[in-house]
Figure (cartoon, rainbow, N blue to C red):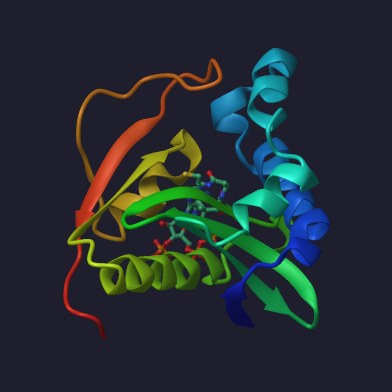
Length: 158
Ligand SMILES: CC(C)(COP(=O)(O)OP(=O)(O)OC[C@H]1O[C@@H](n2cnc3c(N)ncnc32)[C@H](O)[C@@H]1OP(=O)(O)O)[C@@H](O)C(=O)NCCC(=O)NCCS
């Protein structure tokens, strides 16, 4: 498995991973509500994903194995994780851990001293276990029950 910057050519496959991850893994968040799901998925289009890969003040990374995209992670420069989604087939293999570690290295290299994100209910435990702390009050996004604002202070590059 390698982690690399996404290109516009990855947009279709990366978008499919985002949509499957949200639909199939984030059930604790959308609870099968079609309206919540529709709002959440609305901007997850190949066209938008291609734009997110333009490198203009943002990075979009993909984890790739045997030519297949297994996870997608995004960073708004310098220090905000904007997306972090793993394919349902690739869950619990350490891929998101590796992707988040790479996003943290990028942020640090860009001068960030802390990194922020809005966690799903689904990923909350994952981020807590990786040194992120809750900051502020959870608020619903797309109509979900809770999104958790979280932050982590970044250490030296390893
Ligand atoms: C939770 C999630 C982000 C973890 O990604 P992953 O690639 O499967 O994670 P890894 O294999 O790197 O790490 C596994 C971690 O998942 C967490 N985890 C384990 N079982 C879990 C479960 N049933 N439900 C939720 N999280 C679980 C633990 O923190 C575990 O780490 P640990 O083994 O050190 O305790 C991913 O499985 C997921 O569901 N993603 C859905 C999309 C999403 O919510 N993205 C975040 C947007 S902010």
